[in-house]
Amino acid sequence: MTHHRRPEVARRLAKIEGHIKGVRKMVDEDKSYADIVQQVSAIRAALDGVIDVIVQDLVEYYVSQATDTKGKKAAIELKDTVSRIL
Image (cartoon, rainbow, N blue to C red; front, top):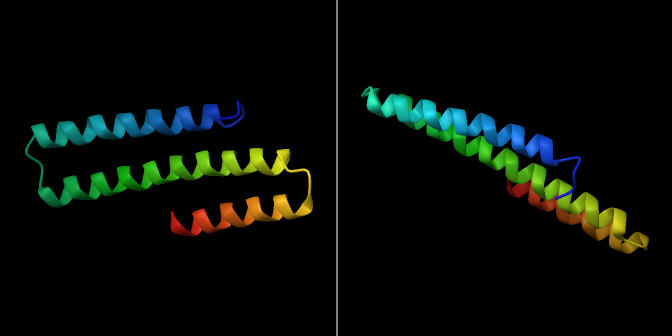
């Protein structure tokens, strides 16, 4: 991972960690299943966001390293495809 994306990933993971602690507290306090599932779903979406940042960083790195137009185009196409999946 390049250094310029590391702080963003660390910040997102810290938020997720706090969110998980909140869900653990909800479980301990016998909150409703619906409320807990909603929060777990939000955590899952946040993790998908972390994956997206990491994949974007990876592709940007490969695009910057590509020496020809065809290689850059392939890397951008890969990033766009993965972004649609996530």
